[in-house]
Amino acid sequence: MLPVFAAAVLALIVSAPARSESADAAASRVNGFYQVLLSTMQQGKQLGLKGRYEKLAPVLSKTYDLASMAKTAVGPSWSEFTPEQQRDLVKAFTRMTIATYASRFDDFSGEQLDVVQTVDQPNGDKIVKTQIIQSNGKPVALNYLMHKSGAEWKIMDVYLDGAISELATRRSEFGAILKSGGPDALISSLTRQADKLLAGGT
Amino acid sequence: MKKATLGVRCRLAAIGLAGALAGCASGESSLVSPLSFASQAAGPREGVPAAEPARENFLALANENAGTTRDPSEARNRVTLEFNQELNRSIVYPAAKAYREGVPEPVRDSVESFANNLGEPLVFANDVLQLRTQAAATTIARFAMNSTFGLGGFIDVASREKLSRQTGDFGQTLYVWGVRDSEYLVLPIVGPTTTRDLIGSTVEFVALLPVNLWGPAGIAAQAREFGVAGSAATTLTTGVNITGSTAGALSKVDKVGDLETLEASSLDFYVMLESVVTQKRDAELREALAQSGWSTFSNARKTEAVSSNSFQKPAAGDAANAGPASGNALQ
Image 1 (cartoon, chains in turn blue, cyan):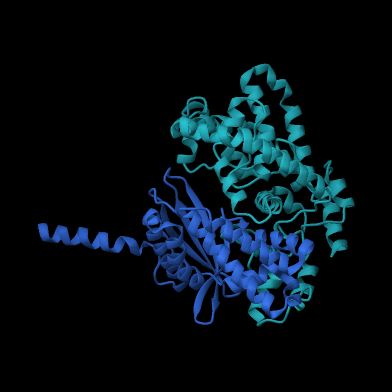
Image 2: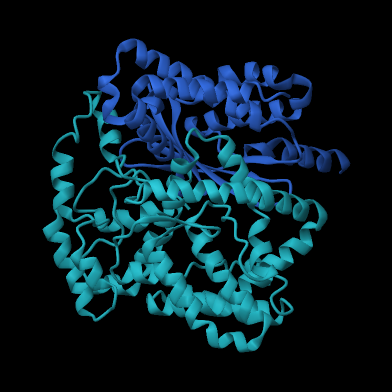
């Protein structure tokens, strides 16, 4: 009687994480990313800013299609960039993104990062809907637009609260800076921002 | 493209609604007709560099103007934003921090629930004007439930019963009625808004003047007006509002921490704030338009599909179905 009960409870515990649909490659990509993010947050203080940066860099580069995001954020003027400028921009954008994550996710206070569902789009992309349940219980909706890049699913855009597209926001920012200063101004602005974040301390 | 939508919007005006005339006259339209879709699907836009076809579609879909509104007063807006941020940094952020740390969360939630409850009658009125019957019904149920079981509005019991807060302000109503064109505006202290939304909140403010006779409750409701104008148009975490009574101000002040984070992670805070505010507001406006009963009087598609928030390939045929669906995909 008791072993049967124990087995049932064990089965329940083991199957609980599978609530986040692992049959879907895109969703499991986001899930894997969230696992690394959670463990970074939990070891946040010990790792320090540099440690968090190094821990997050590989998974962020793998999960986000940062090159395409940078290119889309720049928009039509991408073709006016020289190849070095394009390379430098992607590098600066990558660095800034990782630095932003490293500085923001520095502490763990009981947050839950859940993958909720995946919605297929007619053009082949997927939207992976997730939730961050903050320590006060209030959820924040984060949706990821995933695009198949080669054999891997990668994030192309992040939607905060379901409505605010990060790419659209970046495009506005990049556009403003490009208009006033050109590609070099944009690259140096991104580099400065990353430096500021990385100098921010622990 | 503009000629086709002009006809549609003039039809809305024929129903006899104030702002629609302004909407007709203006050139800008965020309702895209099927004709423009056909031409868009036909070829690449705007000299986007050649890429593999799937990526090109994505770039074509990504609305070049998502997150931007016309901003002819940019120079003045930037100055006002600087002034607001100075005020925020010196007074509001420290006050918000003290509030967050000094007042326990349940109390802060109660204050917010109370302030929101005061606004429900106006939300209801606007939902009725927009012919959003479901939203109106939900709102009246919320108000009744929260005012009675929620002890005068201090406890938000309705949300636990899956009756979530609806949007409904006069700026949104003007949009649904046809006033599509507006400019981005940063007001001193109140924060980012648009010209249409400023008219909307002023109308509501004036409409509430008689309510002032009810004393503090009335004043709080009025103070929320500029909170509403600010909050509806500002970040997802609502903007900073220091006008008027304590209830109005404090319920927003709680969220100020996120405004700080936004500023810290932006390259150009003015542009980032405008983009975030506009996107959030556009989502609210599109949702209202999609749910509005007025849309059944016109052939216009309920939501425009050309935006970075919609991923469907533009196809004139299923556009009408795609509209609400794309809206739902993001909620």
